Image (tube, rainbow, N blue to C red; front, side, top):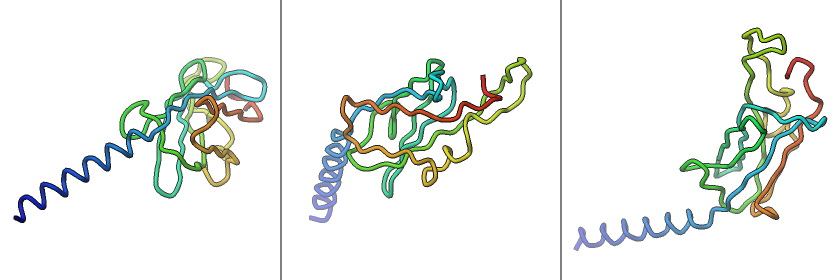
Length: 136
């Protein structure tokens, strides 16, 4: 009897977890500076009290959110958003690490960036300002 109970509980847990996963909403966006130039590297982080998801910023500034698997989206809810990363190449092509953006954008509590999922069009664009002088 105990074996059947454990199997039943395990089966229910799998169904509940699968159901939660199907509630995830796809989310894409673009990270740009206030002058319109794309941020060409780094990560976008969405977090709340129960969930964290990240997306890699591509060369054109675009990103797609993933949590348990790459690009699987986010469950509905309110999220704080932050952006982090560095570039390895300075404008003169020297190999140095330069901050991607102002430090406040790297902290979800200080960035001022917020998003509620689902969001219209499954898109959340991020504009960082000012454009750092030392970032290409």
